[in-house]
Length: 305
Image (cartoon, rainbow, N blue to C red; front, side, top):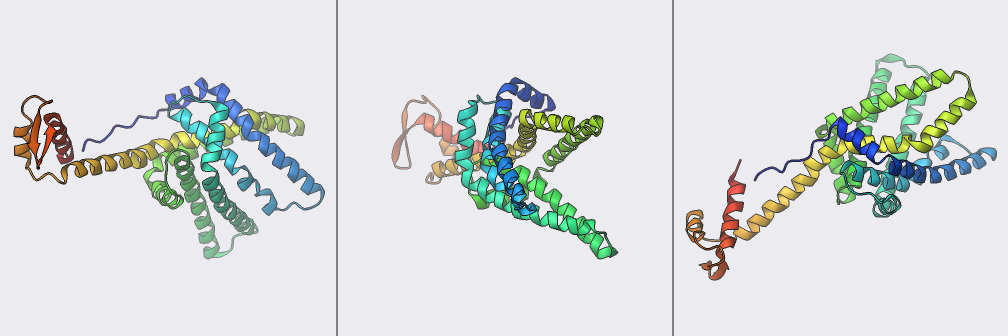
C-alpha cells in the first residue's frame, strides 16, 4: 500500500505557529498560571504553619496536571495548524484527558520524589566505582523518563488510545522519536542558558530577579515549553502511531471487501471493462462495475512494495 505522506515540521513552522497565535497562547498561559497561583498561596500558608516538605511541594505535579493537559491540547492544535478557541479548547483538553493526566502525574510525582532523594544522597559525595555507576544510571534514567514523557504527553492529547497503550507506545518512541527528543532537550538547554544569563545580569537584585521570573512565567514560559514538547514529538507520533493506524485500518477494510471474492484478478479485470454504472454478476450477486474497478485499485495498492 502507498505510504501516506506526513507533513514536515520545520523551525520556520515552529516560529510561525507561535507568532501567529501568540495572543491566544499567552492567554492559555495565564489560564494555566491561575491555578498554579492558588497552589502557591496554599503552599505559603502551609509554610507559615511549618507543614511544608519536599513531598508537599511536589504535590504541585498532580494538582496542576489537568490544567497542563488543557494547555498541551491547545499547543497540539497550533502544531496541527487548526483553528483555536482558547477557553473552549483549554477546558476540552482538561475534561478529555483528566483521568490519564492524573494517573501520569502520580507516576511523575513518585519518580521525581525518588530521584530528588537519590540525587540528594549522591550530593553528599561519590565514593567508589559502584556509586559512580549508580549516579550515571540515575542520570540516564532521568533522560529516558523525560523522553518518555515527551511522547506520552503528546499522544495523550492527540491520539485515542488506552492508558496501557499510551505507556507502551511512549516507551517504544523513546528510541523511535529520538531526533525529536534531542531537539527538545537542546531547546530546553537554550532556554536554560537564556534564563541563567538574565539572572546573572540581574546580579544580587532580588526584586528584579523575582519580577522577571514572574513576568516570564505569567506570559510565556509554561506554554512555550509545552509547545516545544508537542511540536518536536508530534511528527513522530503522527507518522508512527496515527498514520500507521490509519494504514492498518485501511488494509483491513480492503481485505474485508475482497475476502469473499473467489474470482481471480484476471477475471476481475475482464469484468471491470465497460460502463462503470452497469451491473455485473460476481460471486452470486449483482454489483456495479465501478465497485470492481475500486476493488482492483485497492488490490493493486496492497501488492505494491
